[in-house]
Length: 235
Image (cartoon, rainbow, N blue to C red; front, side, top):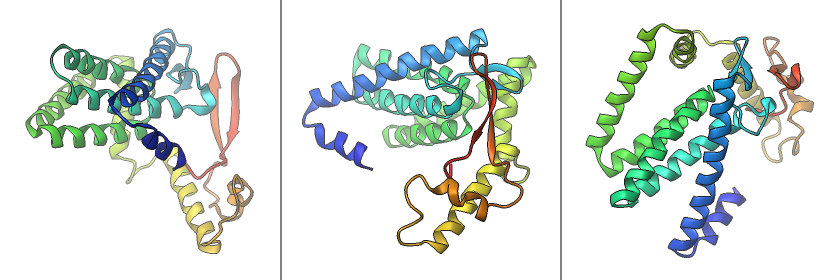
């Protein structure tokens, strides 16, 4: 909470906004380039046995970080594009579209959903006709990936379709997430005012968690190999 409030208070004029937004976009571009390189060369984190998941400089232990960062960068870049005019708008829109590639390579369903909702809200407020056209374009692209039939397309098709089935037939990742959320709610019921203390979720987790919780996340990359990471938060 304090960090975004501090950033908002630090922006006094348009120059401050450009500096903050520019720094964020530059960071996003650097991480995106690293992520695309990892996915193309097979040097990222493991997904379904292949090292194609882009994680940027965050490492396999933080597989969700790059996707979240790229999503933020897309929202900021698009906001600047909608406010700009002429050639600047064209360049910013092109960069927004380009950032969609590392976002896709992150294989983070949560980042996909959050970014898509934020972008659609911005486009609807700006021009609803453009929003409809973008939705149609995304449907065509996803349909093309589904019909292409190659291995890479199958990975993204499976990842996208799993979003729709996460309620009726959740995979292990989603099951663990639901279990962790339920665990956090149960802990909150017993400690509604002060909680259990900072960083103490893992101490109480197994007392409240259902037996179905795997209690760890599989992590694998070429540099450190396979290992298990404990579930330390209610993510």
